[in-house]
Image (cartoon, rainbow, N blue to C red):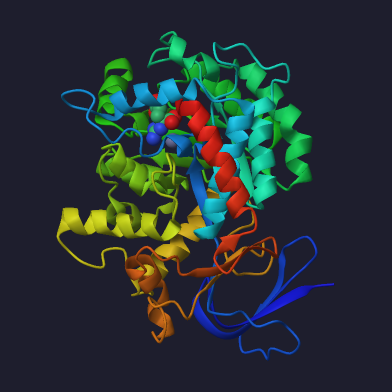
Length: 458
Ligand code: NGQ
Ligand code: ZN
């Protein structure tokens, strides 16, 4: 029998609607979304209902490392010096610590409005590079963490084979990441039953053009397509100027240009970061149908640069947000920084309002849900029939929101809710995971996370 929730206000893909009755089936998919309904016997939502946000880019283990690189270690620190420190940390991750970190991270995500996650997972092997007795050990730890927290997951095992363009041999610090293309495809086959059992989607993440030589990229995409023609493909691309220079030196092409010329990039693809593109690349990449995977707080933290949102939107590009290194785990804050970075560089306001949606918070939230769902390859595109019942209830009594006109609620949530989380309840697949702002596992998962982190940094 269907379950239901009645919301006086709900944010549908077309905008705010009144008196909306949401119904979903036992599988967790919405079967009806009806504005202008009577509540009937359905429970009433305690506040306005908004769609849950898919998080399109996560390296879960890095959550335990957040905050630990905010000191000067050399005359001029950079993305690359951060990466050295991150590698040292990655070298210590174990199956138990990964599961504890990821479980807590996913609890935090749910409490902050993310209802699904795309896990770009590249630490595969034992320290030193020997495969675990069960080669899928660390991937399974992530699936288990998602299952325990109740977050939807798209698991993207990462293909990593080289330390730089032109197939340069991997470094010792990258030994845990390396898999042959065949080995990657067998991992995907090995993971399929476990993924299916929890309605997870499997995809593939060629780490970057630095890490995956052309032949491997071609073979891996073909192999993935043979397994599942709709499986998502995510890649880090054009994040740093150095990467663009190295790609030019190697191929005479810029990274996005090279990718578009050598792979059949389409709506299955998520171009993560894609910060450094020429206007022609913005046009061609947007036209390909790929999602731009923007990670505003990580890109700021690592000194990447600013993605040109107006240009991307002008070209009709799809986009979503990811929390990547997890310096910040809050969907609203990612969207705030995304808009603010544009304001700072353009010296304008309300840059990312939509044509039909003047409220910046609402325009951002709805667009990021659509793009995030596309990147996840799951039915998580908001409050519409056939999509999963993934949603959050705003706390209408929160000081930041109380008494505001409904049109302004999401802008207030994104730009003005301060430290207090204005989310009251969060549901995934129709099951309530967060009650009164707290996940049931909050205390336990926090404790396990703290213990795991302490052991890792000891
Ligand atoms: C990663 N993170 O794989 O964790 C990367 C750094 C690299 C970001 N790009 C390593 N934000 O790109 O080589
Ligand atoms: Zn990343």
